[in-house]
Amino acid sequence: MPERIKIGGIGFVSAWPLVEGLASEAGVDLRLEAPSALAPLLKAGEVDAALVPSVDYYRLAADSGERARAPAGRAPSRFVALDVAAIGSRGPVGSARLFGYAEAETIRRVLLDPASRTESVMARLLLARPAPVQPHFVLPEEIGPHPARPPDAELVVGDAALGAARPAAQWEWDLGEEWEGRVHRPFVYAFWVARSDGPLGRLVEVLSAARDRGLAAREAIAARAAAERGIPPAAARRHLCHQVEYGFGPKARLGLTRFYEMAAEEGLAPEGCRLALAPGAAGP
Image (cartoon, rainbow, N blue to C red; front, top):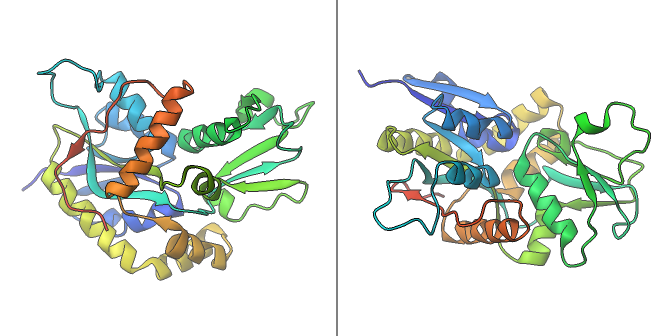
């Protein structure tokens, strides 16, 4: 009997099509967490594969000594990307929104969402380019429940963003839309990463099957998300059926590489890392 495989997934509805049916699949232990929790679980060996946020992958690679300029004959990568699926967008995504309460050129304090560091880095890059604003970025625990001075802008990600309303906001950015308008590349928020010493063939098989089930059932998943998470039905359907792109092919990886290069230039990601791909099923 094959050993059980442990998979870490993101609890946000954007990831539901990628884990469809895994919770009840024989021989699979599925664990759903906030995006920021998954790279540590993978590093600690608590899961064999995880849907890791993009910036966390490069930090994981750096922590493991996997650098693009490593000498020839280096040890194999400890963590490899599975060419199965990702969570991405090419335009508005709905689940990464920045609300501004002051003019964009004058903001000095931005409240980040700790759920995912990738969207936080994305917001920082978009705010810094092309005209540097140099605001101060803070997390909720840094300002407390009743701050003396409210933030000038607020990042909201995941399910909360899909139904968010901020009547006091002077402006709003959908980060996926802003990225497409400025960078003209797909954006990859998270992708499947596995430990290289794990059962890669079986992981690719299981995750590919879940992807196929989920993509075929997006309408039903959107209805379930609206009922269970209180997301407006139209927003849930638009997000899952039209906004999120689940492929992890060459174009998506080009966008991922551009994001990494920009983040490294700004000191928001470790320099000299590389994307290590494992053989696997082609993404949709």
